[in-house]
Image 1: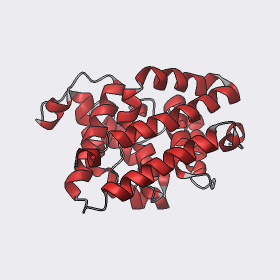
Image 2 (image 1 turned 45 degrees about the vertical axis):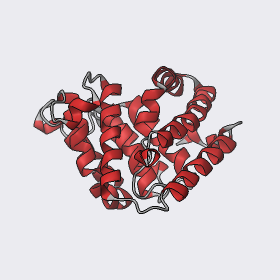
Image 3 (image 1 turned 90 degrees about the horizontal axis):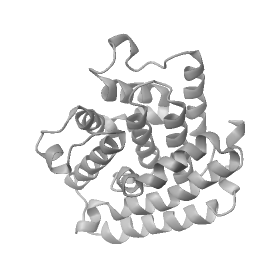
Image 4 (image 1 turned 120 degrees about the vertical axis):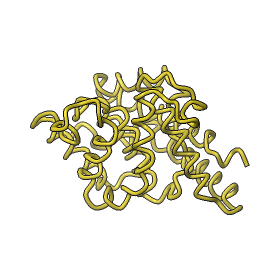
Length: 236
């Protein structure tokens, strides 16, 4: 993808992500010395589903999500979270198939059946293939996750539930890369904590040229650090 060539070398991007990666590694190592459990992973996924749903417009609280009383958006995000880690092997082999499944989960019941899991037109299908190409770029995992997220959200290839898909794909990158194999960081909560910056930097990514892309990447260094702070490991 020509517009993204070399963006990992923009001023402040490499050093910012290196510092964030060090912080995440330290948290996972130090707090993960005590045995982690599937319950911690499930809690991280639940927190992420709630945050992603709120960013998409849900008004449900996390307590309502826990109690099974969430609105439709939060229920969609939960459907995604339940299957997400099972899609990691598929994402590693055939990422477009995994993204189609994520969209099917996120959009079920809200769009016609023949639109579920399908790009909205030929241009969108091309954009999805370009996103899949980002996974083989050799960039650091955090940079790749940030770019995949922004490309999916700003190009809206499915035309529905694209925010839920984009944030799920971000987490899939972090897990499949091995950076956060047990999915204990909550990047969605980081974005929610910085919501105004999240939304403004996404607009900059879409329309602000190289400066906008750089601003988005620098923002993501902060968001991922905040996502690490939101990990259930911090509760231990």
